[in-house]
Image 1 (spheres, rainbow, N blue to C red):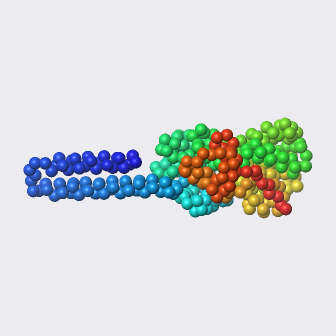
Image 2: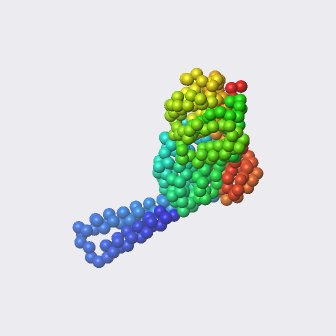
Image 3: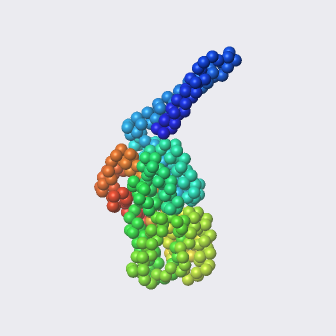
Length: 360
């Protein structure tokens, strides 16, 4: 509407100038420029009418349930976010909304902000972002709210009160504790040296799982010893592979590794396979069922824990549509195409418990 008013104001100014130029006697040689000005005014009027029509169509579309929803992953090009994208696109087709699924090609918070700015300027009705850096999102999320856009986070929380809903895969504490239980199960004992290989150090969801897990382990498994600070891999499997090789060399007494992010456990397992230490070092972590199969088959990865990524993408679109339709989130409410949800607090949606994948 601001754009319409701006064009209309410009039109009025042009018409006023034309009228002013047309007053009094005008030499013949000046008549052509005046006619051109009149034509320009007519063109401006046509443009204003076209923009107004577009706005009316957009508003009518919203009333009919045709919304434009932008879903942004941490990065494109890795299997996990390809799968969530497939679920999001499927939801758009089945629920009758337009879904834009796009993100940076690497885990870059600055690029996410830039892309979100473009989405806001293009007039999306809702955005859902999986942030690489929660703090970096605050200004652009505020801009979206000020523009009347529904704001969600998904996969990774923003830890912001600016979001209308936070769509999460699982209960963070449940997953954090599950990974340590799995590590102890594979190690076959409750004491020993272990390490953590994670994705990005600023990823709020990964940090939350690690914090819950280490706090739990301190009480449940006090004999476990974390040999070094968590090791970042920047959501790159090759990086996790290289750093695991260095890790095992630096700590030859290592007995277990937990990988966080869907690519870190794969890179860890790749290194363990190359070193031939499948029977010496237990490896567990968060990875998709499909990507884990090869490493699970020879024991370089012992247990992969995750959820259905496509289902997460679908749920995110469904929640965004429900909010755009003016629905109030409630525990147990049905999300179209998905089913009932678990609600924690006012706006935290839990998709469900994680699954464990093993060689069998």
